[in-house]
Length: 368
Image (cartoon, rainbow, N blue to C red; front, side, top):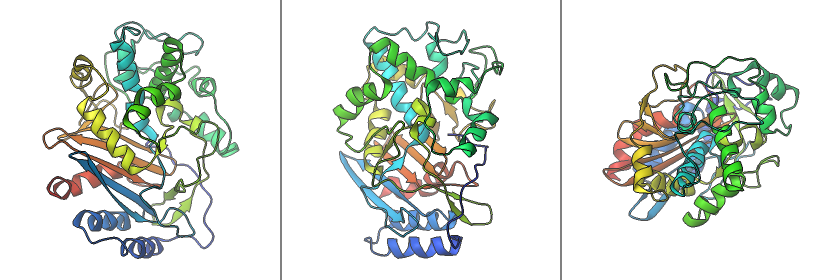
């Protein structure tokens, strides 16, 4: 989620060094069938000192998952069924539900965003929230968030608490005049889903996306700790030391980044997102025609352009996520109709590591 704030974690007993991670990743990967993609992915994990992850490739209705490394400090191998936090990839699910509600005539995307009861005052439209052009400040870049986390990493969160972190913070710009990535935007979209549909955003995502696509692993834990089978979160420091982080509750991310699931289900989502499977042709055209240059926000995730809850990296469209021990990517290549998902159980010096992995492995992915 947040790209430029460092969080303190607790050092693992004996400290996991980059060399230890390399041994663990190599040992786990050796049992997997030899494959250029799996070998390159495992090597990329080792290079970045990331304990574990998985890459999933989907084309022609079939998904292949290549897990690598370890899910926790005890050395449990990552498998096809290991859960990871999707972080900001969640935004693409939420934005899709918003488009569906517009398709149903329930929402007018060009109308002012209803923010009553949030404490957020803005003239931004629903569209401007989804395209990150609202000027609404992000709660996740406020110092108060770090203070609350350090005070109690396992605390429960409400959207009201998240909104309150921006109290007194002026809007970044007049709505519609620039671009700045803000997690508050998508939390507001989650509330708009609730008030307009009668379902909470997790319920709407489940009924409108997860059930139709049969994404059985995807879950929003809310104020409950992540489910059993979830990879532990880690932080890779600049010197290569790996620290385990406490399991922060998903409610700290809410609609901006609270979903968890497997790499395989994320690849299936990347395909549906990029192909517009669950929205009308008009809504998919809108999603892919409102690209904004991300240059005005130096702290933006690594995208060439950003649209309606979706980003573009070269010839790929989809979303990435990062924050508090997890990174993720869900991208679709329209020309080849190939989807790819990358999930990692560490954050570190490179907050756009999955995107850089995609660039590094692109030829293998497309020609595999």
